[in-house]
Length: 404
Image (cartoon, rainbow, N blue to C red; front, side, top):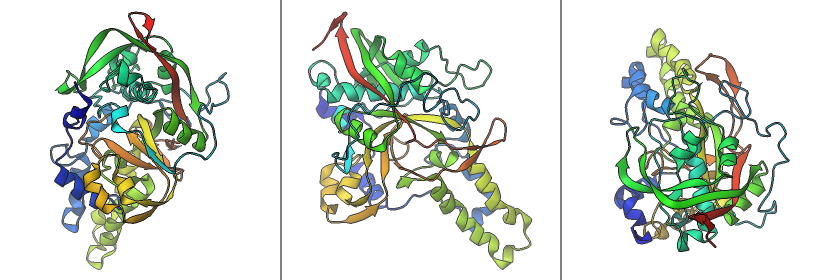
């Protein structure tokens, strides 16, 4: 399969739709909540993907499966620095010589993946990040195809995990440090089969006989400059963050939960303040109910970080480059934007979510509190950039012999 078919297989939206989306990306949007729909907002929060571009609450929760790392909330099983761990590394340096904007090219990362209804996000993000490290080292071009990667499902199940999110077995979900450590042992390689899904709705894979990959080194990075250097020089990283319903509804712009929440709730607060609604207790209570519902945590979520912007002025051509073809964004190069720093992530929820499977997440975002759905207690969130996990010096073997 030739790399020239990469875009064809990615099942992207029509270019006209992509361009229209691109030009409207200057602010985060959500489905509008009007006065007419004020008392029916439950329909908005519980709607299915067929009527709105996000998952139902049930499907959304099924896809969350990363242990929280800092807050100590339910499911916490690792930390930014696990007991006995070494000081976080800076395998690509901590200097500021990196470009202010960078994203791993499409030719060096796998297709947009879909983990399906299994809390295996850690397995998918880890496998995808390893794929980019292999590609940036040049081994894809000679020995591996861009559609080939350590099999995410086998990585997940070999770690003793199950596609179970009911809490009965306690084996759903995983910790990133355990996944990256497992990759220091030989892992099977699979090839993606675009457009075909398995029984749990994940991207279908086919195991490639005789091929294995193995990371020589893994670790954590907490320095933001070290993260950017690794992305620029080495490949993808794995990040984890507390994931709230606002992220489920992300469609454009730079994601920041607090900012997103204000954009959704403030129009309702204006409606509730109208004299005609002063004596309507249902409408008066809606703003707080919405804030509570959108701040109810479903779990942690792991994603592959593929790029960054260090903040400041950026032209529209660069801003749109992760997901829009150059011929459609080149005419917009003269448009300058002043943007905060952000990370670019490739999610594992399919190409119809977010920016065709990608998302921009604000860097150094303010911390916030959330209520966990399992015990209704309040915790502090885990931002995506407090700690990221890396794999380096990945060895590719064919029938037990290293491929050089």
